[in-house]
Amino acid sequence: MELVFREAKKKNGDIVSVPVLELDEMEFSDLESDYSGVCLGCGEIASGVEPDASGYRCEACDAHKVVGLENGVLMGRVRVV
Image (cartoon, rainbow, N blue to C red; front, side, top):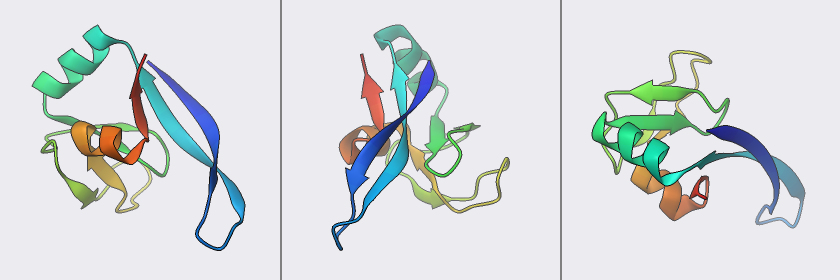
């Protein structure tokens, strides 16, 4: 499991650095079966998160940026490598 930062283009054209969680297939499967999610703000793994969740509060940074793993994959913020 590795948190990397990738460049992304915002709607206004600005380039920003965003955290992307990279997992191997086994890590993804384990986290998915535990109903885990990821904070898109700080990259912290959260537990008790539904796969399609969005906007849950992060216990580490207090931001409402936790998404379910499957939702994170669809958003391009969780990658299975």
